[in-house]
Image 1: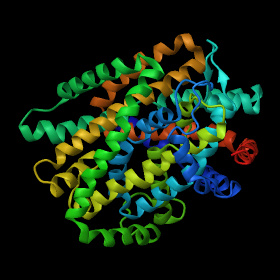
Image 2: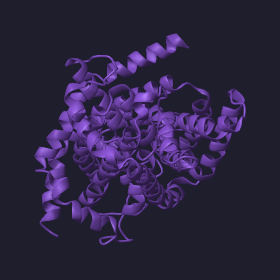
Image 3: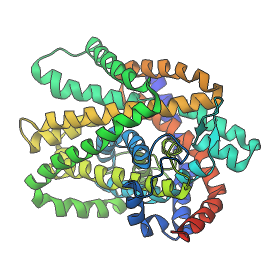
Length: 454
């Protein structure tokens, strides 16, 4: 297992090297400048679209704008916001959060472009159903000669969409918060039992397809964000005197990396910190990865730009709001300096210290909703990749593989899982970003036409 662990860690570090960092951040900055900061200029219009002001039930697609956003957010607002932020702070200190913010801001423009393309160049699967996503806009936008790039994305998506990180961290949270404090012996059998329960819950939803998934996430996602916000607000009120100090540290530590304990990269320890923050930010908001365009590509709309505007709200909610809440909860309690815990366990300690008696149980409830809702969306992404590769009539085979991976995630170590999913997320980003950059002029042409008509 040590050999496998080392190999997967080297694989993840290799694909998350300087070339991919340039592709994600450089590509995102290009989109931001090329669009003249369009995501920010039309933020209010995006809210109106999300509220349903422009909904037309006769438009092509399967779900409305709000359902598309909540389906995408169900995957992005997950363990990356709780455990992923804790991992970033453990390795990089407060400065890592600044680079996660940068990833989120750049990610808004990236999401606008990728999700506009997912509607602009929708294709049809083998059953004739209209579909969207990187694999379709690569072929429909760039031509059949680019199909190998679409296949590359879909193959990477089969692994990248697996829920093993979320399941692993939820299992750890249940053990640390619920079982161990109540003197219940934990081990392989208890972890496997948790995995079985999660697999049954996931099966009851994902086997119903996209419409059932979206109908569940449209209820879960808003409630889980509000609940988490209120819980962290209590922590911040209890430790209000520490907030200015750590907000300042997030900015200053981002450029000196005094608390970075990872390996130096290009640019030394600051370079390592930047890559850590961008990597964790990308895992959190998935901008440029290509998962969200698969959900937004199914939206009921005849205006691609509208869906791009709705999609850009995802990184703002996910990284700028939810990740910041988690970071401040961990930082202001000081637990990041006094504990050797990592991942979700570190966040749980922060909640327990700030809200004695019930804090950890509030977090467990939030984590459960975050993780279980993520299970639904990731399954949809995986089946879309399988449908593209082998045909829509074969997609149900992926569900069996997906449900089995839930059991694996419950009983496997964190490092192997984190590096495996990180690595395949990076591979998904390569074809997504290349195709989006090549088709970016088409997006701006559609945007100019749309905004001149409203």
